[in-house]
Amino acid sequence: MVLDGDVIFRIGDQVHHLAAGDTLALPRGVPHAHVVTSPQARVLTVAMPGGFERLFTDLGTPAPPDTAAPPADVDALAKAVAQLGVEIVGPPLAVR
Image (cartoon, rainbow, N blue to C red; front, side, top):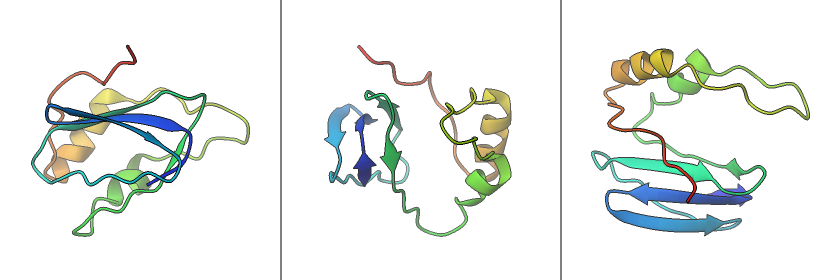
């Protein structure tokens, strides 16, 4: 669920433009990506079955207030998600 901001999600070949209050299901096994198209966004994610939250606890670093998130370490991310059975299959989704 998008709590604040605007986000574009691509699920397979479908593109969805979401704003605050919108929800979307990301089916297991279907490639997906997202990009924030507003200055910032907050998204509530529920992953089932449990275990995927380890990605956030293992790699997450709290950002100081009023600062942007640091760039992701793509190699560390790929390694972490592989341990969870997830494969990164392409480049990040870009704003067009």
